[in-house]
Image: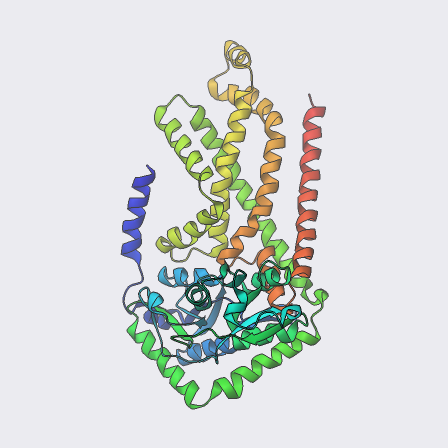
Length: 478
């Protein structure tokens, strides 16, 4: 069944892959340009708070605005992990990627690129200030762990040119800086402007020019294969931007202005609306995922207990497959895999579906074990009194089983609430996603995480008290 599903899906995916020159037509028709980015790379792309709302700013964002303007379209930014951007582009989730991306030969096999719009002056080591006399060159990092953003050119440079060092890749620059400050790694490789931005905003860090040699330096706009019309249109905008010198005259000074403003006003109270918005999305995701999980779990439990071999086999295969694969992979598969078949599948809906489907497998086992724990004599007595099988389950078995499995179900719901943080990887603006935005805007790693941890505890503790209340009510009614 599973192999058949994958075969069907692969065929459908191939058929629905971004068609040649379809993206420009879609943009012209919808009057909307969707640009993917990983907004944690100041001054190229990052976030700031304006009147309590998230605003994407930086050199790449300004370029995206100009491209959208020339295409007579409204700009929509999708913020996600750097290593998910090309997948989003290939599956049509975004129209183009502008995220300080270097057009390497490996990437060119999957996507097309515009001409280079910006050339950084080189790669830098971001290190702790206390180590400024210790780490200056590649040889100084021998035997040490050096970090870079997963899937980035810097990651490949470390692999090729720092063979005596251990490379550590993380999806977000914020997490790399956090790992650096906590001593998990000795240095982080990043572009000059980004390294200097973090050093200027954190007195414990310093940026040092590296001796890494780049074969191909420069940032370009990534576009899906076969979109010659869109590439031509983007190159036209880049020509205008370079001719007018907008990057040096407007983009970089404007980014610097936002960074200076952020330094002056970076208090956590300013970002309270971020946390509130994140909590709202987390609660919505949890509620709908629980509903899917309970309905699906009940159905699967009854199918597994059924004497029908087909229904039993389907339930067993589903439960074992879901429990045997990581939830993160399931979320990415639903959004990028199933989402390739349903082009308008939003990240929030994809996240709810993925978490609900995962929860259904575990809830099914909880319910099955609860039903199995009821003595056979209960069923026999009910049937001898003339109750049908459905009524026996409805009035005798399920009520007793629910009391037995309630603690296990409660644990599953609490786990589900915490696991909702995983959907941040596809850009859902739940609590963890908002926390990462605050980390980027404030250049602080630990404090936003601590506040998020406290909020998660308050939510799970409250849910736990509610579940305990109903558990006591059930026992009281015995």
